[in-house]
Length: 145
Image (tube, rainbow, N blue to C red; front, side, top):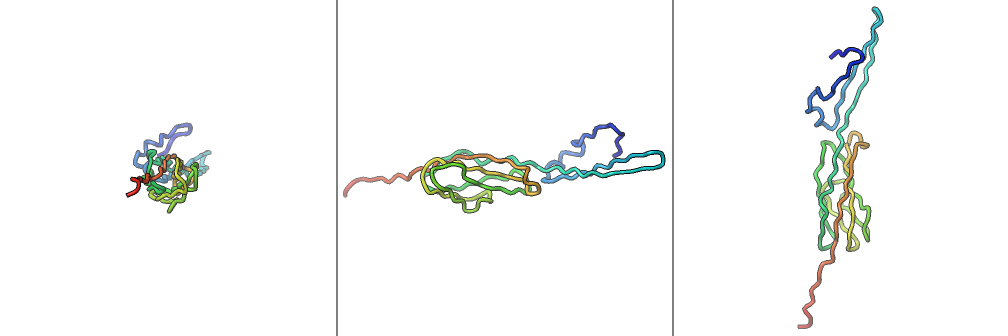
């Protein structure tokens, strides 16, 4: 489309389906004319999908292992689990997988962060925190036989 100088362009008029992609490229071509002389310049504008991370609901479990499982919010994502607090050390089976197991060295309350990024432009990212309480497994003792 040719738009007169000083006009505004509503990019949403291109269709909402464009914005469901992880990357959308648009090329804007500018023309200038002075009599018979015409010049032009092109600008590439890239829109990257921004994820909305959700680490899941806070939970409790008996034992020292927990299965973390979240859904990706965009196409072509990358992710990273990390522990930000807890009484011991947390070890993830695969910290870049959205579905992974974590094992802790001590019982107690741990906070884990899920960071989801757009693989095409990782500055487009979001993070969310989930708290998991690892509880001691009860050991019943009925006394002597």
